[in-house]
Length: 474
Length: 125
Image (cartoon, rainbow over all chains, first blue to last red; front, side):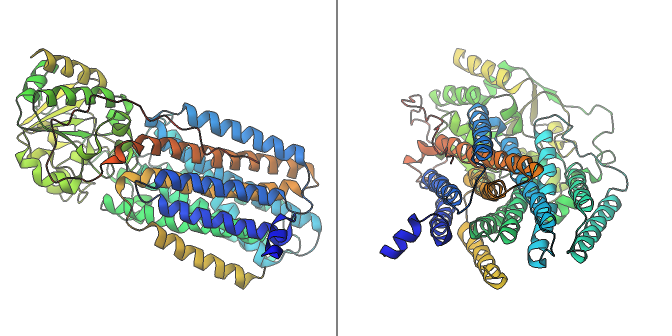
């Protein structure tokens, strides 16, 4: 007991390992608690506390120097992290997570580079059990960094969210991958004196691969991609742990790698697609030929806010189906107002949450919770679909693909088989949307042309505010 | 630490990750992804070790950038997760999802204290 205490207090050696054990125990408990609504917040704090312990333990290692640079890196990074997370809007959370994931991957790649340089400068053979993890960390870290940046740029609308297909894409990717593996083998064979230029070429090629893999993936699939990259970054951190003989990196990185894989598969399952299908086929498979861009105007019914208000106010029940458009328009508070007005008139309101509505699972829940929508009004897809035929009016706010009946009816549709919120079963449907343009999947939505569907072309926030005012004045 | 020990730790940690995560309500997917995202910021320790033992100017630069990246990942990740979960904290009082479709009369116009985006969870060396 006393021995352990002194070991902990003594700088370096087993003391650091003991603190690492405390740290990753806290990570495991933190993630565990993160899976339950009541304990999630506490779990996050525990994990953060564990991280603080791990950092302190590392700083206590024997012989650590260059304190000025360490302080500089910590200071700059912390400042950016704090400012970014205070400023970020709830609607921008997905791209924020993508960005944080990217810098994590970037850190792994840089550490791998520095390990190689260090190995070369020592002038003797680098053992393979150190070199192989370094190469793995370099490749995966670089893919993750650049892939996440593309995901961020897509979600931030810096580049088109639609799938960008490059001809011969798969071939280019395959060639890049083969080249990367060949270069890694070259370094491993020449492990007594590896060529640093080849290593840098590996970093660049992996970065290009990260770009090319994510670019053709449409916005609708981004959540799955971010989650997958998250798992990858975890694995690459574990690899860096192998290279540095650091048990905290191995445990924490692996933990993220495996738990991230599970999360990714759960998300893909919710879309009824496999991860491989998302990565290598993409929704972009038939964006132009898929019937969406046939050009001719199909007949649809268009209404204004006043008509919408009347339909809603006299409905037996109303189900609101939010999508990413709601997030973009920041319409969550305005929609809540509509719901409040309707409830004052005795119209029951609930919200139907598609598992992948928005750009991340749970995205809509976060937004609506921000607007103080009671938790019990949020219904999951399986819960609400059987109630749809008894629903008076379904209001689709900024959602598109997740309501497209083609997913059920048209086996040739690119989204065939994806579970949808069956709003077309409701007695009436109001779609609030800026135009008839297709969603992230790039395909037309038959729902818009159904006889019981009315289109309200407007910005979601403005439309909701107008509807709320109209309902109030009825 | 020898390689086999490290591989043992790796395999066990992988199983812990698989077991710990099963059956997460959809609502918590985003926060949980964000939290695990923050945890892989642990690579920052690698940056600390690199810089701490570096003796070459390019390594200083690479390592310092790695530390900064890692710190963004850690601090930003945990804080953003905390903000997201803060949105839910108030709602959690009555999670007993009754089977009734919707309770219309439950007045929810009062919002006495809005959950603040907590600024906790930040840590640095």
